Image (cartoon, rainbow, N blue to C red; front, side, top):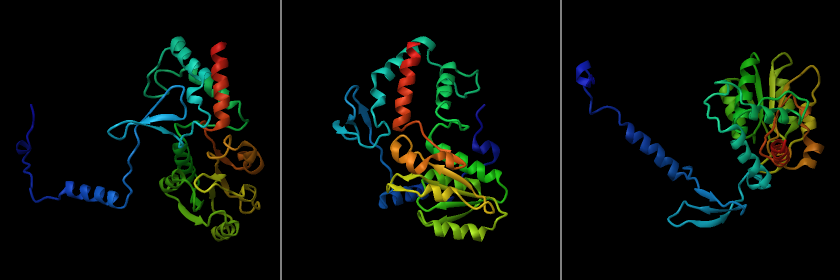
Length: 275
């Protein structure tokens, strides 16, 4: 039986808070400040990378997509596409809500094992680069007692969100300013747990961090270092080898969406299908 408000003694007050008006004002502010995000509706054409059709307006128009992580067009690579089609025929699509239910999927395990051969360092996979930064930084901050997080002022939003969710005290140092960072470390003292977070290449400005200086500290300070190299490794491989090399940092964030990983994944997909 449906229960009406009057059945439980509730009578709506017409003079109560106007929630709609409050929300409308907030949305209006986003529009006025040009912060209301509008997405473009794209339809890609097979075999015509990087061309696509923009369906945002009344009439679709052909455009060139410049803002994509698919740098080499691996999303339309014949070997990759054939491997995907073959995987569907061999294993059938498996729709699950959680990785632990009902069991682990062999095709994904094979991909993970191949991924682990790329380095001797221990790895953990996330659904996206944003989640990787956010979850790792927030978790480290919660695990380390009385942790102080020191962050470059131009760090990515995902790193900033990780700091916020950690609940830790934070200090922001001037972009790539080693002297400012050193002064903040001295203020923090030697006994306190400290986490330094920064990027190898800052994608918006193209700046390269002096990583060698950021990860080598006197033993009495011993900060933990976290490096986001999502915009570097594989995208500019020679530069990465010369300047970055995430193994120098205690924890490093990488991505599967950049050039070198795309090449490796494509080769794996083709070879795995043939075998």
